[in-house]
Every structure is written in C-alpha cells, then in structure tokens.
Length: 275
Image 1: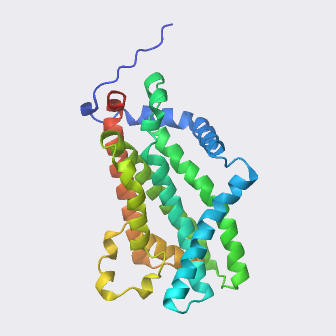
Image 2: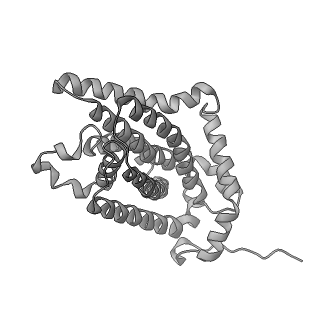
Image 3: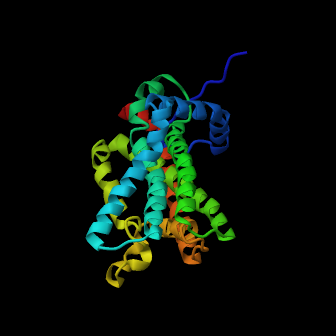
C-alpha cells in the first residue's frame, strides 16, 4: 500500500492540523531528549569538568557581582549573596533558552531541508538543554542555603510552580526568537546585549524591595521581574510569593508562549525557502 502524500502549503494558509502536529511532536519526544544530550556532549558537558562548569560559571559570576556590590555599597550580608546566586541560576535558565533558541532553526538548515519533522522540535530542544543546565545549580544552591543558615519552611514548595512558569516562559521565548532570527539574522548578534540589559533591569543584582519608587513603576513592563522576585522570596526568605507576582508571571509566560508558538507554526513551512 502506498504511503499517503503530504502536501505542505504556504504559511499563509494558516496553522497546520494541530492534532496531527502534536501527535507527531509527541512521537519524537525520545529524539528531542537524545538530541539535547548530544548537543550537551558537543559542548563538552559530558565530561566532569564540563558539568562542573555548569555550576561554576553562574557561581563565579555571582561572586564577582557580590564583591562589586560589597565594595561599592560598603555593606552586604549572606541573604543578599543567596538572593544574587538564586536569581542568577534562574535567570540563566531563561538566558540559555534564548541563546540556544536564537540559532535553533538557522543552524539546523541541513536537517530541515532533508527531513520532514515538526520544526518546533529544535527550539524545544534548546529549552531542554537549558533545563539540563539548570538542574545541577539547584543542588548547589541548597548547599549554599544550608551553609549560610538561611530559613526553611513549607512555603519553599512554591518553587515548583515558579520553575514551571519559568520553563513555559523560556520555551515561549526560545520558539519566538528562533522564528524571528530566520527573517532578521542580526537578532543573534544583538542577543548578548539584550540579555545583559534584561539582567540589569531585573531584580538579580538587587532585591525588588530596595528599588526606588521612581523606577519601580516600570517593573510591570519586564516579563521576568515578578518571576525572579517570587523566586527570591521563596528560595532565600522561605516566604510565600505574592499573588500579584505569580499572576503577572503566569500571564506573561502564557502570552509569550502563545504568541511565539502561533508565530512559529504559521510560518514554519516558509523556513526552507528562507534558509
């Protein structure tokens, strides 16, 4: 019996049949996991020193920032170092998703031109890689948390939904920026400056409670501001996050994910021509 012929119409025809698309994507979940692991091994994360660097890179960065804050500010404490470290670890989950996602499509040119598969697998793999890099940092942070003698409580279980929100947001950003980079290749050159600006505009080097009122009114425009603030409250101070913070982070994550996914799927069939 002959196999059915699949006809790929131009992207202006709209979204693909979503049930068949999602079924095809789920059937390739093993490939996504193995593809992500192979990318990690290619980046030397399969070795002991490569895995250590996953933790040492943000840890050393937090140490440098803490030293600068301590020298410039003249005073600091253990809670501030814990906030800086915890926030950097979660921020790197988002930043690594963006960095891996921006070239997910353009670097997979040969695979796209020669194989039929859901293209969204590539930015999804970039987010999976970022998640693999994030998990070891949790172990390190809990070690720092214990050494510094910071409080524990059941409120720290709020970390689970916060991580879930961060994954959805990271995935949406990776999908969106991978599609944008197909049409505007310069975005990959601008990305380091964009992520650095996002770092400085987010409560990483400082706590949200210490912001001036003049600047604080603009925090709602930053999609990860309340996410990082909620993460710090839960992980550092063992307090429940604010309802406003969780709602804002959830809305931003879902909005970015929905817009990014729609934008990607509606133009997926145009990628082969653009590449």
